[in-house]
Image (cartoon, rainbow, N blue to C red; front, side, top):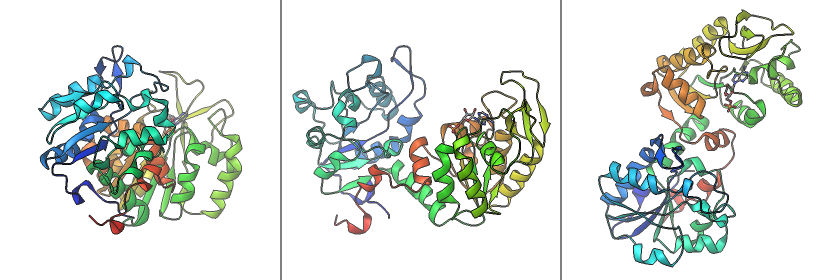
Length: 394
Ligand code: AMP
C-alpha cells in the first residue's frame, strides 16, 4: 500500500516534525562522528522541507542510553555536522520534551534538533503522554527513519495518532518503493542471495521470499544448516541444530528453487592466515569459512542471468580476507548483471564497497533489521502508522 509522501503535503509556514535516523557511530567519548552516512541519507528530506518554507523539528535516537541522559550519546555532534552539511545553523535543543522547548520553536526555514529521544524511557515504551508532548511540537508528522521503522516507539508510532496525516520522508519513500517492488512485483528472473551467520535470523525471509523468487541462493554459515538437513557432513562448521528440521522441510517444499554451495573453503581453525583448502565434502575436523570457486561460478552465472537481485548477508567470514573472496566476487556479479539490485544489511554493503561497485547497485537499504523484517513479510509498525495515499484527503 503506497504511503503519503512529504511531497503530497503543503508545508508552507507549518512546523514539521521529521523522525530521522541519526543513530551515527561516535568515537572519542561521543565527541566525533566516525560516519555521517545516516545524516546525509536524510538531507534531501530536510532540504525539501526547508525549501518549502517549513519550520523543521528533527527527532532521533542515538545508541542505547537505557532511558537516561548520557553525554556520550548526545546528538550535539550531529547538530554541528548537520549545520555544515546544510550550510545553515541547526539549533541543538537541551532535551526532546519540556518547557525549555517553547523558546526554541523554529521559524519557517529554521531547523531544531531535539536531544536523543531515548534519554527518556517513555520513548521505547511508546508512552502516550510522552508521545503527546512530542506531537505538541509540530503541525505535521513525517517519518524518514526507515532503520527504526520496525520498532513501535513514541516517535515512530505513538505520536502519529495526534496528527491528522502522517507522511513518509524521501528516504523512507525510496526504501519502501524498492523493497516493495522487488518483493511484490519483481522483474524476472528474480534471485535472492542470502548469507550470514544464522539461519534463525533469516528463516522468515526464506519462507516469505520462496514464493516470489525464481531462485534462492544460500551461502555463508547459513548454508551448513541446509547441508546438514540433506544428510551431509558439515564438520565443525556453524550449524543451528534446532533449525535442521525446518531446513529439511523447506528443501522438500521448495525443491528446485533453493540452491546450495557445491564446494567450500575450509580451515581447521578460524584465525587470520589459517591454511585453507577447497573441498566438495567437508571433513569432520574442518570448518567452512567461504563458498568455493565452483559455487562462485554457478551463483555468478545465475545472478548474471537475472533481472532482479535481492541480497542480504555475506557468503563467508568476509571480515577475514581471503575468506571474503566469495562475497566480493558475487558483489561484482550483482553489479555486472545490470539487474535491479536491492541490498540490505551492513555486511553486504561493506562487501559492495570492498568490491568497489556501490554505484552499480540500485538500492542499498539503510535499515539492516528493518529491511530483514520487510523481506520477511512483516508489516513494520512505523510504516503501518503512516497515512495510506489512497485514504488521504490533503
Ligand atoms: P548476519 O549478521 O547474520 O548477516 O551475519 C554476518 C556474519 O556472518 C559475518 O560476521 C560473517 O563473518 C558471518 N559468517 C558468514 N559466513 C560464515 C561462516 N561460514 N562461518 C562463520 N561465520 C560466518
